[in-house]
Image (cartoon, rainbow, N blue to C red; front, side):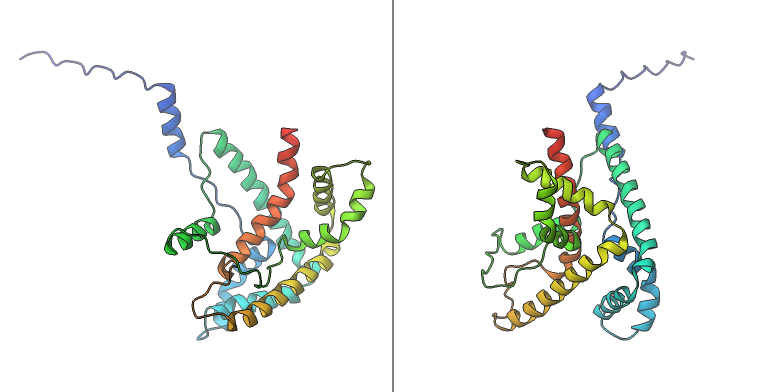
Length: 241
């Protein structure tokens, strides 16, 4: 019998190909959404679903929101700490993901917006100037808006917008949950007023009209993204400077 031949060794993959395969094996970390309220809502959802049995699914979200508002600053603090820890872990995992060659994918809100735009024929819906404007930036946005003049005075003369934003973000991060609560309450009042205004505005629009503002299902995620971008933007600009 003829001697068996050894299988020739395959040549090693080029470095670029190895990097590509490694990037494909990476899994993008999931961004924690909804802040401290999101953790509270997810944890209590089974209980709220039981209480809202037989009611529309929106009743669960409404009950969660009402119960969250009843909590004191001290009761909210554990959820805020857990969200902070989850966000810090996400940031580290994302940095490792990108450093390993991973490519960041778009968030759920952005993908829904693209899907909605595709359904509408690829044309961006023109915003109605008469439509109520949704308050942006969350509680942080209210804080910066009310304290902008004070922040500017605390900085050297001639400070630019980047420096003002960076200082505002620094002050916000150092505030306790109790100190942030008045701004959270003000934002909630603005959000509720916006919701009522949108309900009245919708009555004046033809059936199926969008009104030019974001869908309610995207509002929570987009608000979270806006607040994070507002605080992260100064850091990004500072690195480029």
